[in-house]
Structure formats: structure tokens, C-alpha cells
Image (cartoon, rainbow, N blue to C red; front, side):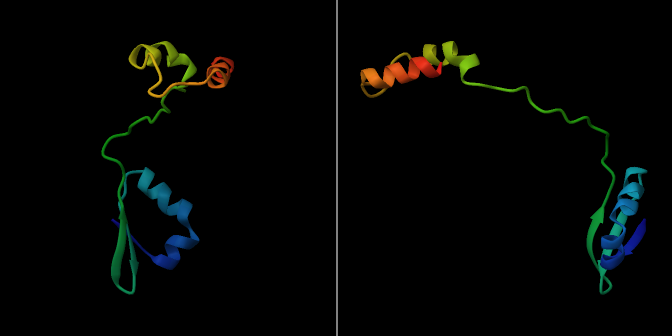
Length: 85
């Protein structure tokens, strides 16, 4: 395990992160007290963004669940709704 003072860590963050990426643990200390510890992940995981979601894609499903508005909609509201979807 490597040890870095808070000042050292702040001045060369990329170097310390490179150590962690290679599998080493880094302890960050200030005044002789450990403030934090950076450890490599247990298992490399690929994080992917969730697929884009839009109301329009799921409109039929939503209308099946909620077929009518809870309160009466005016013609203007219905027209506006039709234009948006």
C-alpha cells in the first residue's frame, strides 16, 4: 500500500490514480491521520448508459394503463396533446 499526504495527492492526482488502476491501494493522510483510502475495484465492470427513453415510444403502453385523464380535459388540452405526440 502506498501512502500520500493530502498535499502530495492533490499535486499529482493522475499518478496516484495510475497506481490504483494497476491494482495498488493508496492511503491519503493528513497530519498523521488517514483521511481516505483508494482501492482498485474488485472486478472490472463495464458501465454502459441505459438506452434513451421517451414518452412517445411508450405512449400506447401508457394509454393502455391510463386510458382517460383523471380530470376532464378541454378541447385545447386534447389538441395540444395531439400536437405533442
